[in-house]
Image (cartoon, rainbow, N blue to C red; front, side, top):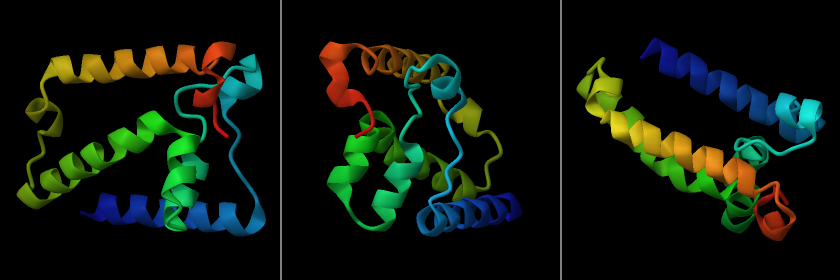
Amino acid sequence: MKKFIVITLLLISYLLISSYLNFYIPCPIKTLTGFYCPGCGITRMLLALLQLDIYKAFRYNPVVFIMLPIGLYLYIDNLIRKDKSLYKKIPEKFWYIIIIILIIYGILRNIPMFSFLAPQ
């Protein structure tokens, strides 16, 4: 439970600093290659969610936006049950599917035809 509180406080602190000072940690993949990674836009997505702007949050990173409630549910369920085997509870095939979806998404958002997937 202590880890959850520390991580939550760090995330909130980062989001507050980002929103008030316009200080963002740059994506190393975007900086080095010029391509969007599957995670590009997550900070802006979280900031838009804090402002309750669902449309903007979805536009910044649709895949993570859709996966976020599932991940939060699994994490909170794990905390409530005090079960330390979250990774054992989720089938291995599920993790492979998530990885494949993120790889395909990362490729598609860099193809000009799918430019609507790039962070807006």
